[in-house]
Image 1 (spheres, rainbow, N blue to C red):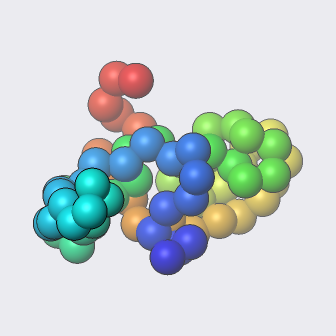
Image 2 (image 1 turned 180 degrees about the vertical axis):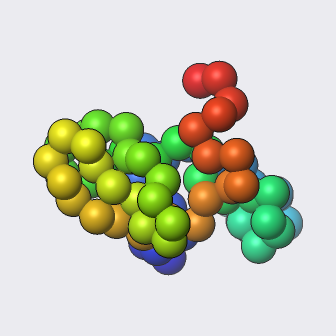
Amino acid sequence: MFEVCKAGDIIKARIISEKNQVYHLSTKDKDLGVVYAFCSSCGSLLEARRQNMHCPKCGRIERRKTVLDYGKEPL
């Protein structure tokens, strides 16, 4: 789960069900996933680099399932 997204990330997902007022989401499609990710260490915006995410401030490397146009949508 934590290679898909982490707390604080902004994601694009599809609602697949709503049971007991709890939303169940999917990021399976190519156009779904993390739109903006933040470093779990320092909180800076992560930069996409090939298969990993890189923090320009502290150098931490993290993994996320990103959308194809990561970082290009307005906040």
